[in-house]
Image (cartoon, rainbow, N blue to C red; front, side):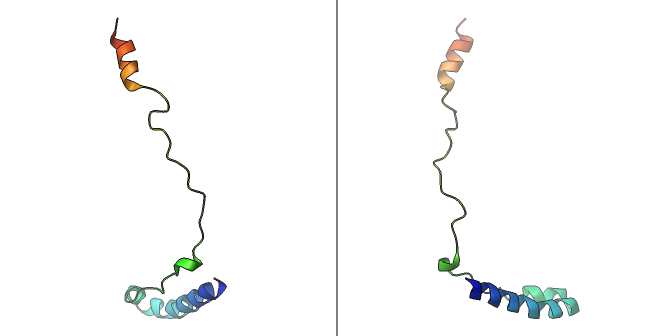
Amino acid sequence: MRAALAAAREDTAGMDAASTADPRSRFRTLPAGIRLEDTVESHDPLPPADPTMGRDPDQDFLLRNAG
């Protein structure tokens, strides 16, 4: 992973000098891709939250409008 970061820094170091002359030159080529092996999971996946938060909207409607 450190090798990939070092290579990315070298790529951007050369681009800094070129980007001052012509700002559009930065966007002529894509940066080097990141391998899947170099990525890190940022957080543990959790189940999605209950959108009704445990409430029954049909029951709430019935109780609110029953009287």
